[in-house]
Each structure stands twice: as C-alpha cells, then as structure tokens.
Amino acid sequence: MPLVNAPIRIAVAGGNYSGLSAMRELYLQLLATGPDYDGTKQAPPNPNVKITLIDRRDGFVHYLGMTRGLCQSDYGNKLWVPYSSMPWLLHPSISVKKGIVSRIASRHIELADTSDRVEFDYLVVALGLSRTAPIGVAASTRDEYLKDMDKQRALIGNAQSVVVVGGGAVGTELVADIKSEFPNKEVTLIHSHSLPIPGPLFTSEFRHSVAIVLQALGVKTMFGERVVDESSASSNETDAIPVKHSDVLPELIDSVKCNATLTTSSGLKVYGDVVFNCLGVKTKASLIDLPSSNDEPIFSPNGIRVNESMQVDDPSYSHIFAAGDISSKDVLKFAGSASSGGRIAGSNIARLISAPSGENPVLGAPKRKVKGTGKPEYGSIKLVLGERHAVIQKGAEVVPTETAIHMVSPDIKLGKATRTLSIGVFPTHGK
Image (cartoon, rainbow, N blue to C red; front, side):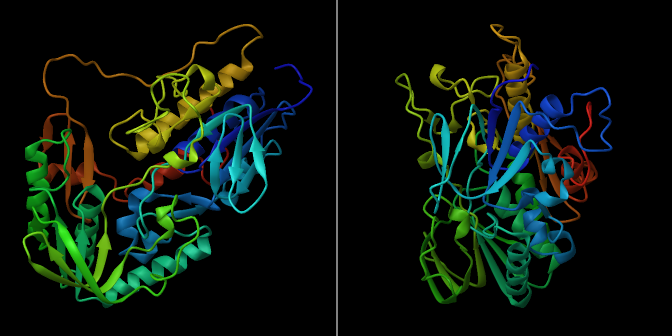
C-alpha cells in the first residue's frame, strides 16, 4: 500500500463478537502484513490507516455464558475481559474510545454527553441488540460488572422462590442454570406460548424436548400464560430513578424485581422472591441516521439491511458495513454468526483499501448452504440447560438428549471465544 497524505480512517462501533472480529481482521490484513510478522510481537506501525474501536464498555463480555455466570461466581467473573488484556489493540494505529454512540451519520459518529465525534472513511456497525440487565450487562467497567454480578448472585442465593418471565433461549437457560445450581429452590418459568423457544425455525420435537428437560430438572413451567399485572413489595433501589440513556440502551435498566406477585392472563397469582424479565430485545434503530435512497428503509424489522458482503444495502453507503445482531444477515442471532459477519466486514474493508486505484475487488461473503429442497427450513441451535443437559436441533433433526450434552462445550464456548478473538495474545494468520 503506497503512503498516503492522510491516514484512511476506519471506525468500528461496538466491540463484542462482531466488532472484535472485525478489528482482528483489520489488524491482520492492514497491519500484520510484513513477512516477519509471526504473532509473537506487535505488528509494525502503518501510517496509512487509523482504526478506532468505540464501545461504552472497557472490555469484551461473553454473553453466551451469562445465565451460568449469574449462578456460579468463579465462572461468571471470567466473562468480562478488559480490552487492555488484548495486546494487539495497543497498536499505535489503533485507538479504543470509551463512549456511548448516540448517532451514526454517513461520515461520522456522535457520542453522548460530549461534542466529540469520530469521522470515518469506512465503518463497521456492530452495536448488537439490547436486553434489560442483568442479562444485558449494565456495567461499563469490569469492576462495576463484578459488583453487579455479586449483587444478582446474592439475590438468587437468598431467595426461596425465583420466577423467570419469558421462555425463549435466555429464559429457559436461566431457569435451568438456577435449578441445577440450587435444586432446593422453587423455580418457575412463565411463558405465553404453549411450548418454550417459539418461532417457525424450531420443530415441535425440539420444543417438546426442552420442556421435558425443564420438568425433569424440577422447574415449574406455566406455558400459555401471559403476565398481565405485577405488584412488588420491594424492588431494586434504583427502580424509581430515571436511568440516563436507557431509552436507547435498555441494558442500563435492572429489570429484576424482589418480593413480587405476578398475575397471569388466566388470573393465577405467582409469587417470587426474585423475578427475572427475559422478554425480548430492542433494536438500535433510533441511532442509525442513514436516509434510504429508495423506498426501503435502511433498518428492516430484522436489522440494518446488508448485502452478502455485509455492506449496507444501499448505493449511498457502500463504505458502511453492519455485522452481528444489528444486521439483517441472520434471522437467528448467534455469537458464531456475529463473529463470522465481523470477520467478513473487516476483511472486505481491507480489500477495498488495499485494491489498486480504479479496481473493484471481489468481496467476500458467507458460505451458503444449499437450499431449494422444497422441505421446511429449520434453524440449528444448541441449548445448554444446566451442566448436565442440552437440547440440540440440527436442521429438522433433534439430537437425542443423552447424546446432546456431549456435543456442547462445558465452558459454554468461553475458551473458543478467547482463542478466536485473540484474547491475551497477538492474532496469527490462518487461525
């Protein structure tokens, strides 16, 4: 790459699975390009590029393990990894900026509570989706995270009865983890559908298998019931205090209620010493200020419209990419697909920058499975239900439960995330 008058500015907004994967790919393809680079030391400076990671947190959070982390302190304390422990992010061409993204325009990012803005020539939007705390982590530093997790674990540990509202993947894994760790507690799951894990991508056999495991664990399941009223004798101290920026970041709100009585749609009363809300997610659509050049909005119901190369699917924004849960790429929002999308986005930006002037490089795209069989298409999912149970659907097939537990990672892929995101080490090519 020839020396330019001013460095090409690349911004990555959001730093978890997709954002860090994009950053790692940019490091490898734009910085670690010399023949002497072997992953044992920092890549040499590159005056041609300036890469900025923007995140409201000072570290990576392994969300996949959050429900287990709420029950086991040794494991949970490992889920937050400070960016300072990733030596490659200390490269002189890379800066990590801590702040809340308040607006994304076509050529700059605005941050909350400051007049600062980050100008860019290329951008990866990797802001994900939002859940209320504690599943959606409210903390912005590791110290805050450890205190919050200790508080939540104390609530669970001291409770005789725990109620979880919402029987999607997070809700079912949470009740399974709590009941597995505290078998003598009364654990109840309230879910508005007739079976857990709703949606057309999951088979009836899979959903029944999940329900059977929960019941075998001793979880009380209340399917087909919707919470219509709630009264709480006491709740978290911050409930009545407005939380700044929570309108766009629901994870800043602790949704846990204490000593609460719930009324369901059939009139049943359910009491919980602790009640967790695991209902749905919220998009970051309000932050994206990118007017569409056609009749289709940039932000679809499933996320920012992107093409196969992870570019925003609008000719006005070919320099902007979106990856992970905030993109429309995948109906099922998983960490693996988020990481893959981030790698593709980072690699494609590197290809665009490195291409000779006037050439249009071929951009990468995800590998596609063969379709068109005429049969219903189902998703694939591994649901870890405590330390001894798992339910796996692979396409239309459900793996026998006695086999499934041996097909999941005991650490819920924490080790894999550590390796693939080069935590604690320098990235290497081909790994």
